[in-house]
Picture 1 (tube, rainbow, N blue to C red):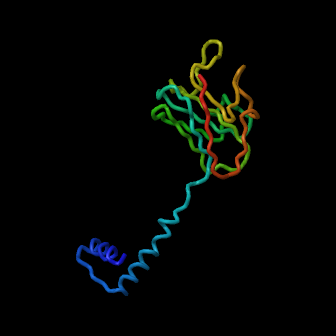
Picture 2 (picture 1 turned 180 degrees about the vertical axis):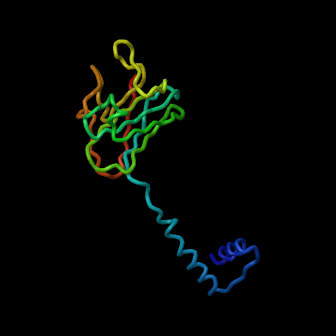
Picture 3 (picture 1 turned 135 degrees about the vertical axis):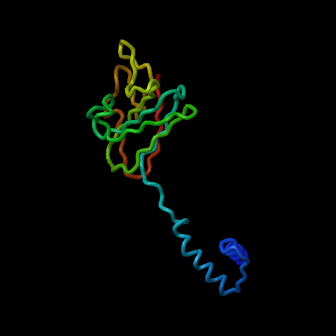
Length: 167
């Protein structure tokens, strides 16, 4: 360890360094004094981390909308969602992160916005033409599920979830 410190000091000062055991000890203490900042770096902010599965292609973006109430869920995400994440799709994969979220009950709605118009494209009957999914894999058989079907409790710690898209 002493030789490593000597070489490091030599590189920093641009000259050859030589020190005895006392100098090495002082240098080691100085180096270790700055170690906690690196070794004990703060963990990232806790949050809700969502992996989006079954994306059929990398066209467009994925929109993840986090709701804390049934108001506007899931269709009015721009107006009513607590948080929204618009993501690039990389190799048919996407992952959204909602950080610094207060504990509570939430629901997630996700769309694969292939034409990047900010909404879920549907045909003339109202059947979705783009991918969609909800937390708890809530079913959308005869229309969008209600907030209660997609709701989950969040305790303020890290929560990893997956949402599969339906087309």
